[in-house]
Length: 321
Image (cartoon, rainbow, N blue to C red; front, side, top):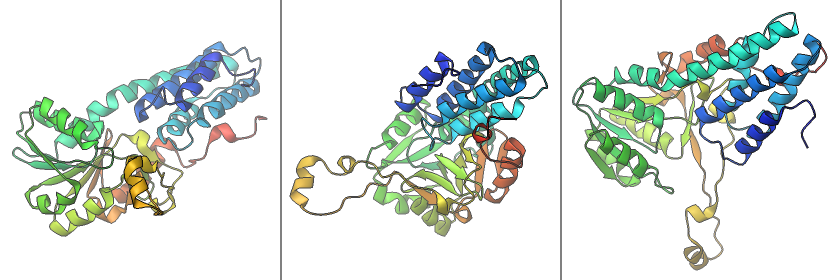
């Protein structure tokens, strides 16, 4: 049961996020900001303290649906950071304006990121992809629009074969694709000019959390002298995680790796299916965002610029002011 202070839009949005009816980093972030905007406009608070309390309750309701989705708390932080004023009307106005500005910035983020990333790609380059990332694809799309001829090597990315999505998207852009099994990546690095991947999240030290297999690919790429570039909107930055070593890796269902009949044939063995791994910053050459490209060690500075010195959760502070 939701607290009476929570607007029905907030409750519905929280439910949809929790049940993954709303999914994808940018989509989740935009929905959360829109829900806070609705809460602010509908508030009947009679004092600034009461208004802030309502917004905190709404934000907690949204946050607790998917606490591991990095873009969700980042959206809430951005709205709260823009909220200011000494009266209810001022607080309402700045909250609504902040939520709208956040969504506008979000709408432009992938396009801007793509233009930044495209500048790293030269005419005739061969780009090696792992898994599927719309941010990484945005870099290629922008480069193609600039008139650059690119080719791609795409890993299948087991066990869910997301590489097929990437291969299809690249082919639609007119980019020639060579599709390879995961175990062939080391061989084909000799033909690649860049490794281009996305990110599930990025820690403050520049560690990249991404689809399992990214870390091994990055280590091999460094040995071969192939630059590794991560494309990620700033909603993927995780100000709460100082290093990648502290990130909890999700274990997915074993059926993705072994169907039931094959599992039965193997007998009493343990099957593990980690969804992500962590690539240390020393194996990443650049992180491309909508604000520019950065060496991994500069990410902590970018986090401070975007979220301020305090990277806590303002919706968890006591409701009394």
